[in-house]
Image 1 (cartoon, one colour):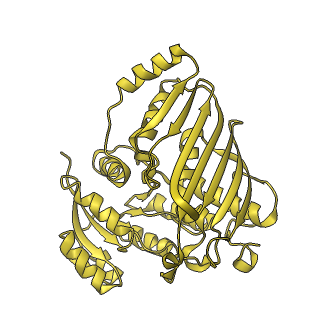
Image 2 (cartoon, rainbow, N blue to C red):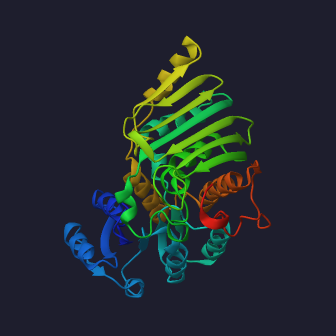
Image 3 (spheres, rainbow, N blue to C red):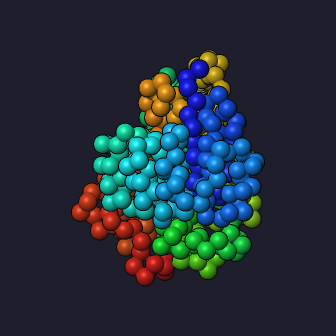
Length: 361
């Protein structure tokens, strides 16, 4: 077994999910510290997860000599500064989505990461569900053929109490609404499977709660390979679900998990165009070896990258593709035009994707 890595988790909201995953991997990680401004959360987490230290001061955390990895789970508007400080301190960094608040910020961080001793790993844990990994196996074996159409639904519910957390629902601190903070993982799966996006046309609205950011969206996409996709998002669903369908030349694939937040997990349904294709699918899937899913699955792969020299499971290029899609969605929804990708530094939303007036029509 490769050496254990010492990790410190900063931010104890979604950070608790990260801590649970590290706790499930005692041969891979030691929880060296937890860090949060809320002293009550800090004390509880330190005891629950057996952390070596509980700190409210990020500078004090960075000064700890025995921390290999800083895992950032704070509100989105804080990510860039915390990432840059951790990289400057020579640490490996894991950071929750969205990695930054603009493509300009991401490109600045990427430049800093190139010369840093540590690595930067964006979080996209939905990729590591066994259902989605089965689809990736079928793609690798050439059984899918060309892509035709993908449909992705993110139908969740966020009531008024969700927005009682002061930084939520505001452009300045949450940086966006349902497309950025809820559906970003499902939308990442589209590029993970079907490659780069070529063009986006989007409509966004705020209909569920009286907040600044969008809570409903409908997006039409053309991929670089010529296939099409639709993305539908709402935070007003009476029954929460996430659903994906990929239609390929030789087969159709559908997620069948009923859990809205584990869309990549089994069961997934695979149906070939012919009986012969179905036999080939069955033979390929018989070779599939299930592995750890969600955060545990990503953290196992990050550990292998940091200790055994394997590739990072999610790269800064992956994070940029995700934020390019976000930028295109927000520009299209505001301007009422199709937006072509990739997005370069001369694009009007490169430095700031927020709409004028910071409210949707």
